[in-house]
Length: 61
Image (cartoon, one colour):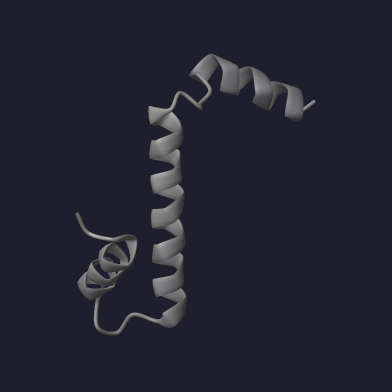
């Protein structure tokens, strides 16, 4: 199984050659957020659509 570092290196290798440092950092950040979201979902830490809708309605009041 590949390490986190190895996964990030492979991800960077797949980016275009003219990629900026800012784009690399953004790609790593987005990947981290997606992985956290998937883990949260697997562990049951999420809101249903209806729950999210209710929370949003409260915030917008």
